[in-house]
Image (cartoon, rainbow, N blue to C red; front, side):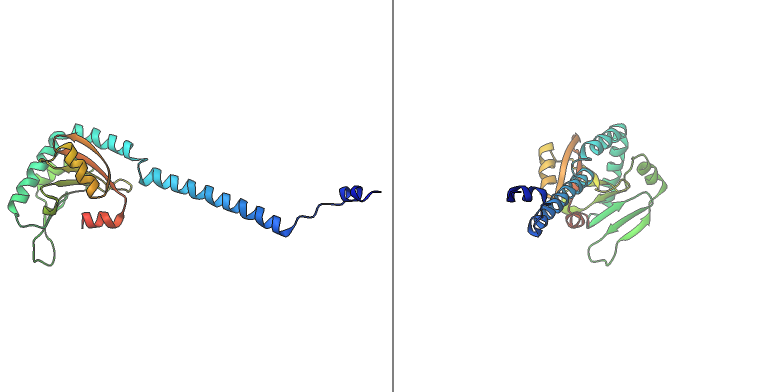
Length: 199
């Protein structure tokens, strides 16, 4: 029997180096596929994947309650006028808190029933926030949805372009104009930057 015939009859031996290379390629490909799937899922949940859906919902609710937002804005402007030196005013259903300069903590009072009624006419708003560092802007923040956090901004002096410039400069991922002076913002993906924006 020829030597070549004997080689055909004997089982092939796999070199350990070849097995190791194939194993590493399979593991690497599996890891990369897993990373792509995880990152795509995170992007869909925390990134632009929910923007359109949530922006549509916020716009629908704003359109239904435009008068309620206008009443809440008028009430917030009165609070701002009552506390011209405040570093922050936040108004929620049950509490209204004012941060005055030089005080160690916010001064909070129970939100009066009349203001609760105005607040209750809004849909899904967790807090209405004013900070003078944001130059006359008021924020209607939505916390009860899954993160990330979305916000409706009231900026009566801003054009749509100025609102978009503000959003980009402060880390908001996207915007949608709702009408003169009203814009949906959201989200700020960087938690540290969000906390800096809304301390």
